[in-house]
Image (cartoon, rainbow, N blue to C red; front, side, top):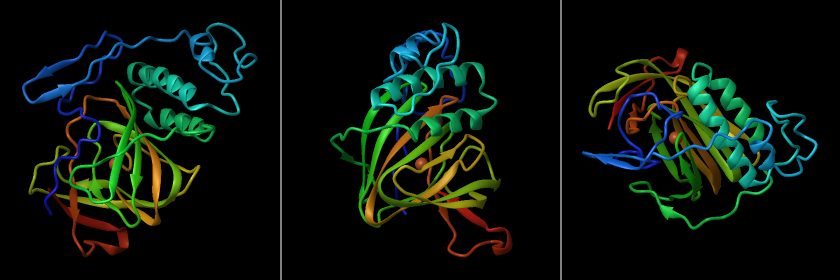
Length: 262
Ligand SMILES: [Fe+2]
């Protein structure tokens, strides 16, 4: 299989934890493109509330966490996400799941995700993407899969994800590493264990952290699929890579498979 590097975000390389409390600027290093953007930390209970729809009574006082409104328009969601992600990466990187599940709960309240113009994703037939927002530490993509389209097993090196089903269906197989190097090297092998298979439908959310379900494979259903793909960069990510899975499982009882990095 010949596939280009998985660069969902145009952000590659490096292993240093993002210092989101510091001003970030655009820069280009040798072969490395890192988008550095400024964050405006919204005052809790004020800025975040100002971004929410129908929240005049939701924020009780300055300095308190804003209550989550019953419904979120998309722009309000993006503002909340940006602020919350910066805080998670800076202050509480040790509990990614708490953060991811909080974002997932917000996603269930998003009222409408606007349509964008898609462009084909390099090397993958029937896979198209459009970008809603990229402002470290987040990137928000619209993902469209034509019927039966496949995104082969790949990792998310240094970043976590929330995937919200918008249209159609997509089956997600998730994996954890069992053995092998943390940093993929083309041609080297990694042994993985399947951790679950999820059918993503409209309104359902899938999550992955930097250490849980970080590898996955997506297969679109017979009517295709559309999903909102949200990445949170807990470290400056290395490029993601495809892992070609062996056709036969290594250990069927434990759902363990061998794979080779492409
Ligand atoms: Fe992915």
